[in-house]
Image 1 (tube, rainbow, N blue to C red):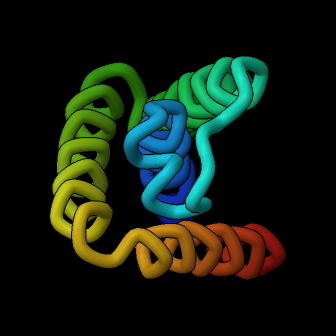
Image 2: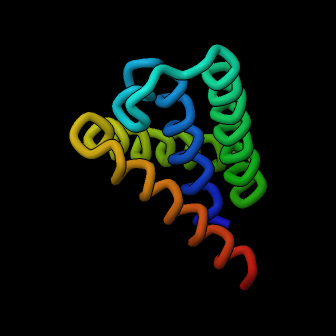
Image 3: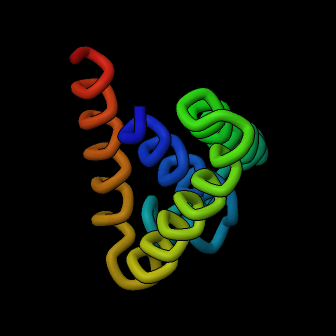
Amino acid sequence: MRVMEIALCYNGMLALCLAKPKHYRQLFRALPANTTGWSLRVLGWLAVTGAFVCAVGQNGWSLGPVEWIGTIGVMGLILIFLQPFRPQAAALLGGLFLILAVIDAAN
């Protein structure tokens, strides 16, 4: 469950980051369409909300929000350091987190 929270936090932050034209252009070498930016924002917020639900479901209301804030802070920090210099690596890391979350959910 913790891996799912990490994957949702990172990919939510990545989607919110890619909703900005500057970061989208770094990765895809083109400007996003209006619907693409809007879709990435919606998916990003849904993923971040899903991570919050995972954290609260695992630890309850006493520690869940605290764990979520810590996780989203660390994932945001990783993205901040990775996105400007290696945008392809940032996207690959998001895919890796999703694969690990699926494997963890299957067990």
